[in-house]
Amino acid sequence: MTPDVNVAIVGGGPVGLACALFAADAGLEPVVIEPRETPIDKSCGEGLMPGAWRLLRELGLEPPGAQLRGVAYIQGRARAEHRFRNGPGRGVARTTLHAAIAARVAERGIRVIRARVDAVSAHDTQVTIAGPELDAITAGHLIGADGLHSRVRDLAGLTARPQRASARRFGLRRHFGVPPWSDLIEVRWTRHGEFYVTPLGPELVGVALLARRGADFGAALADEPELAGLLHADARGDSAAQLGQVRGAGPLLQRTRARTAGRILLVGDASGYVDALTGEGLRLGMDQAKAAVAAIAADDPARYERDWTTITRDFRMLTSGLVAAARSPLRPAIVPAAVRLPRLYGRIVERLAR
Image (cartoon, rainbow, N blue to C red; front, side, top):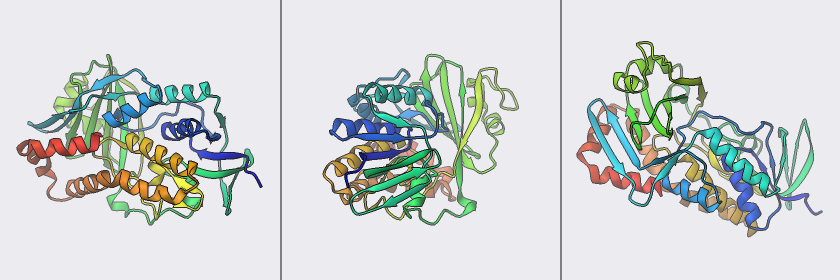
């Protein structure tokens, strides 16, 4: 039986929509299934490393934001910074980025179905997808791009044992209507966790806090007087410049047993997520999207498993090591070590910025 579509993509975030665009470029007929209306906001660092920015431009997209020239690690008075050697990245508000990609998907005439998926049935030649508001669809292949808490990952039996509760970390993010004071992503190491500070526009800065469950964004900000001053925050961490509510996400670390199960492939956060300390999740997701589409076009989904391992190797090795150090007694030595070893710090940033 001929499937209804070549590829069904569950998840209409930036990575899922990028999958659809890459699939259309490859001559495939994609359909995106996503229950929420666009744009979808998310607690994230919002900094696109140079590799992600280049991939967006390959798709003809240049959403407004702020140029990012490098990454700085800051702890008290210690500061290590590295400026990208091969072009800038881009700080883009999540909703701005998502809206731009969604507009391109609409221009291309790619079908987006507003529905939730709660049943997946895999066969030798196709996959059947169904849900409460969704008549069953058959697809030659299924891409799960539905984020940290992927339903497709669970339905395909690819979710690995979760991290122990005591080690789980979460993300909190808030925007501030102030002019950026730097053209770098600043990662500020504090006793509460790590603040990611990202310029997003002429009068907009995004601040994300990565910390253990129960962290209070305002209290953590108030405990960092330099950052609080730059954001015009008071002794409670409140600022007249703060915009909207604090958004949260997590737990961040997600493990998978594999990234493929027959004709089902996982991309982006659904494919597994190493606790963030480097800020290039979107670049990885878009690289994975290209690789998944290439494997589907070749009717060789198993190839994607090998490609995923190659694409994520540097990230998994470097970030896992850094996260382990950040959770150990070595934590206070990380930024001073980066200051003393600027060439090593620069090489790490460059590897992750590609």
